[in-house]
Length: 197
Image (cartoon, rainbow, N blue to C red):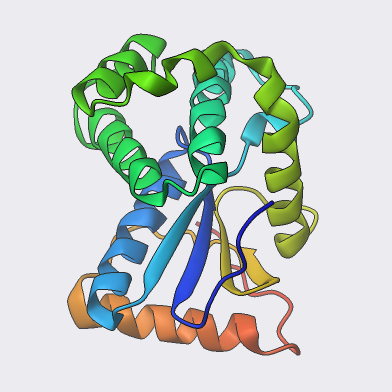
């Protein structure tokens, strides 16, 4: 299914419509640049996590997410990691740093702008949902019950939920935080660390 991580890679499982997940991704990009490791971008579904029971105020966003995640799943299985990153980056900038609403129109416009129209059919291909479920379930198992998006896999088969950040560290600070997170997650004695937002 998914390629195993090598020693210079981490995997980031994300739902593209989650603003907290977006903020963590910006830190991870910064840390990867600072420390010269590679990120494998992989899908995670908050809709699956919540068994389709979505509050009304999030219903539109979750519908958009489910469609985009089909594209991301297809890209992931085709080992098109750069395309996953480009798509997520463009959507996140539009939704969380720009003024675009989370909508199917934004998704389709971004696919066209990035010359990724060949994936447009995947938006409504529900046969991809089983493959998404498989990847999502693997990631959720890494983090455990009571967790969500994002999941960070720091070594093959070893990961955790988060971290959730209120601001994005830059440069050396991003690298230091990554080192601390990595140290904790890879220590088999570590279970949980949390504080109220």
